[in-house]
Length: 149
Image (cartoon, rainbow, N blue to C red):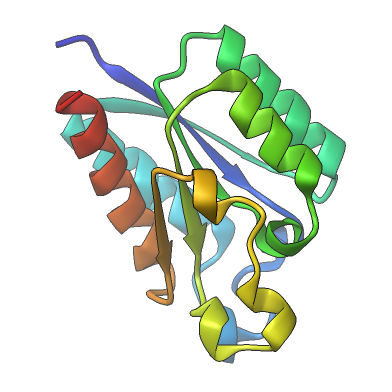
């Protein structure tokens, strides 16, 4: 089987991981999480490309590139855009790649406005509440799904 290509997208404020509200988001930095994912991806036969932006349009542009660059799937932590971005939803639907929605915290234990996601109903899966392990669970799940399709 050919090596899988997976895009990992991180939304706004995730560049502050490690210092931003560590009681909610943990002490690992985004660089730590990306390194762990890349290593795990290699062991699972997947090549990962990671990208973080605080700007909705840049995330959408990256999704469009994924759709035209032979990516097999996406892991996305849309962060606050989870609850606000119809544009991210439309981009994900337009490129028609399976994706896993990831959250470090359990959004359902937080403020009521965080309980609504514009992406969950079109995602292949949702993983939330396990800190940085949410990403590794998402990667394992997506790779399994792609290998079994």
